[in-house]
Amino acid sequence: MLSGADPAITAGRFPESALAWATLAEAALAMGFTVEAYAYARTGYHRSLDQLRRAGWKGAGPVPWRHEPNRGFLRSLGALARAAAQIGEDAERERCEQFLRDSSPEAADALGF
Figure 1 (cartoon, rainbow, N blue to C red):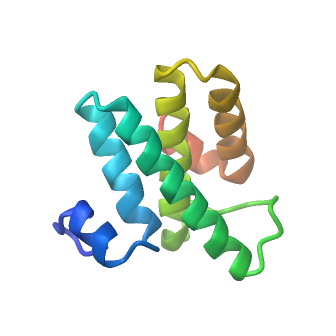
Figure 2: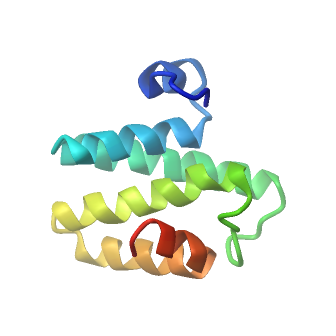
Figure 3: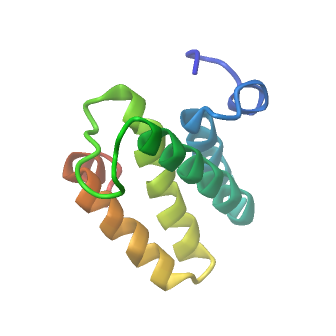
């Protein structure tokens, strides 16, 4: 995503951009739009899973925070955990937080988990 670009426009033009969806989710959370944040985060999460699998990831193991393209996935996962907590989806919140920690302890720390 281009710095300063509107994430909604970016997501509309490049729906495969997990970073755009993560940015939308984080903004929606900040504005109190929890349901929208949940939907944006889930979209970013699933888009990311598809991309990671195409790159050879088997569904478990590290997803390093230091590798910039992974940040859309990791930020989406963090936003999904936060949105799930706000709508009372405690099992999903716990699953997402654990998945984030397992994927990248550095990301979990950076995102405040």
